[in-house]
Length: 369
Ligand SMILES: NC(=O)c1ccc[n+]([C@@H]2O[C@H](COP(=O)([O-])OP(=O)(O)OC[C@H]3O[C@@H](n4cnc5c(N)ncnc54)[C@H](O)[C@@H]3O)[C@@H](O)[C@H]2O)c1
Ligand SMILES: [Zn+2]
Image (cartoon, rainbow, N blue to C red; front, top):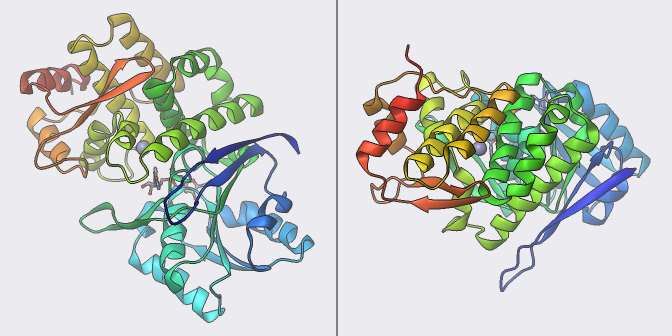
């Protein structure tokens, strides 16, 4: 094992200490010794999908076997379209048929879709069973596997049904990213850049200097980027697990981004792509309100552009944008909430954006045709 790093997610409540480690490194998939202390029984159920299974499932199961752990595999259809009740039920059917018990750990092996579905299954199967995440997309490694949000989509909206449920541990093997498509990798980088912007100016500068290494999947650079991203998300989640305040800062670019995803039809723009264009819009708003300078705006624009992420939002009428933005879960009592940049490395929340300023940003940041 080379240079493994551990990020601790510190979650204490009066009843319980639900803190857990995230192990990050290159080629950790077969390090079953890291899992062992977290398994109450020598039996696990691995939930994965039809894309990830042929790549990593056998290797992982053989490693488990070497440690005397037997596993049940549940292979789901791939895709956001399957993040629903029907697929959740496939998990329950398999668990029940195989007589999985209270102590059988559910392991999610895959991207955010598999992680969110498996986490929700773990939260509810037999009123809760142990859960471990092995995220295999960059987005899942830096975002969805950290913080305990689990759930499924409803035909009327994304992620509307779910639970907060923390895993026992997260095992992040950055070597799994070698098989990820360029487009998915870049979409994940959008969230990494977001962490620098909202909380760590030095990390943002480091990303500016190392962006080529990140795109070309240099192992050390990937590990460092994943590690710092997880640390930042873990700090924010530890301070505000249930999103009553600070956790909302993680949504920089997301109100605009969700409107873009929705307008284009889910799946046409990847989430990270919409977040990239959305972050440029949030940066433009911050510039108009005189928080960040023109040169800071250019740095933000240019890093997304170098990654090959969209920097221009699709053309819609400003009214269409506004009505889509009002659908966002983050709207409170009808008031739209925006995450802005006070400066690079510090985000803030604002409820009071003048309508004319918002309109100006929409018109400036969107494509002409
Ligand atoms: N729980 C949270 O806090 C949270 C946060 C952000 C996003 N999410 C959710 O995460 C989901 C998006 O996650 P995602 O971007 O990982 O998408 P995804 O899970 O759909 O994965 C993207 C694609 O990559 C494939 N894939 C996964 N690992 C691979 C690998 N190593 N090699 C090759 N292909 C691989 C998948 O099968 C899929 O086709 C959304 O449903 C979103 O709502 C949740
Ligand atoms: Zn996001």
